[in-house]
Image (cartoon, rainbow, N blue to C red; front, side, top):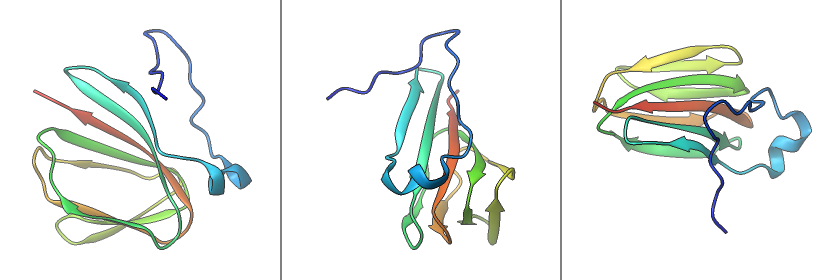
Amino acid sequence: MAIDHALPGQCLHLGPLGPALRDAKTTALVKTDRFEAVRLVLLAGSNIPTHAVPGYISLQCIEGAVEVEAMGITTLRQGDWMYLDRAQQHGLNSITDSTLLLTIYFD
């Protein structure tokens, strides 16, 4: 089944999922040639191995706690935001059930 992306001007709610988080899936919100936005769902103990993408990245923790490995280790908690430079190596380790808003900006 294809994922419907947000339309220009469409309002999406990205607040905490609470108890529904355990059954939620990572969802692509929008993808264009200039940027991509994803609601990333990571259950406790899951990880995304170290990698790099060709764009600039921002990560905002919507709920939970996630360790970001990039130039050291930083823990993002609800309300925290982080920027990563283009092609910067990074990995994620979820401490608790978590959701993040991942945005990638391309040149």
